[in-house]
Image (cartoon, rainbow, N blue to C red; front, top):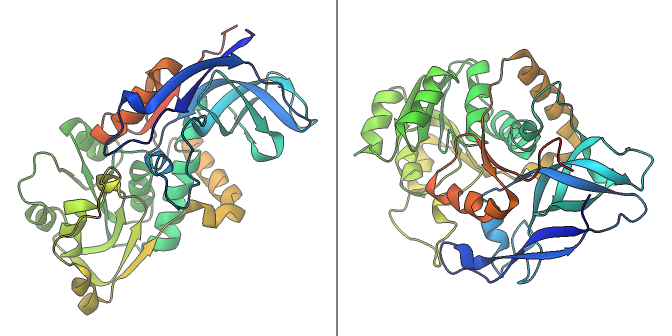
Length: 340
């Protein structure tokens, strides 16, 4: 283990879409764990769209970062020093840490990683926060029933790809929006979606939906917002359920966009629209992890990670989320298993 620890800081609050000037890489000493903590060598770190909100100086469900703060997110790491009886050096764990080579984690707030179930990076995606978001968001908020038509925006992302597969398992017709032919092919050929729409080449979202979902939409899982959501709202069936998980189309907006008012369309169909925070289901995370892990281990739930190599490229990985570079979960490989 070296004595130097690289870590990324928030250099400035971005206006509009972040760029490289929003980030600063600094070197510091490797931290020592306090009692009850673990020092881990970070193997993989997660970049997620919600982090854009933490760059704003505004109240939100996730506490904003101050300029100069170390950036934080989900990590998978190997314990190199333990000040807790719960874990030993060499154990693999996942929890929230810094965008850094080394991070200290509270032993009470981490979970073990079992490479026999899935590769370590999967614990930041299908077996981590995105997978649990998909599980509870669809089953508890969307309440799918066999025969329902489920539409997912951002369907080739970390959350949407799991949502669609769980909907397929529940006997639903599943339609996904994604941003390339490679992604739509993955949805239909590998994940079992009944239809997929490339929103970057589609001229008329409503016309595409009428063809892909001719009986209307019973459940809409919204990861994106914007004109896709506008179009889906016009196709909702009686008693439809809408789970609002993300609005990445608007995360870089400096002003709240206005446009055609869609709420009147919810009245005749009595649709339910509900915002989703996975933390509301924290007491049931064990249930989700157990079921997701079983489905992954059996091959019934597929997953994919887009891996960017090197801590120095973490900002590029994050910025790539807004141009749709990733298929499945976007992660950064910080170190290899045999790293010193």
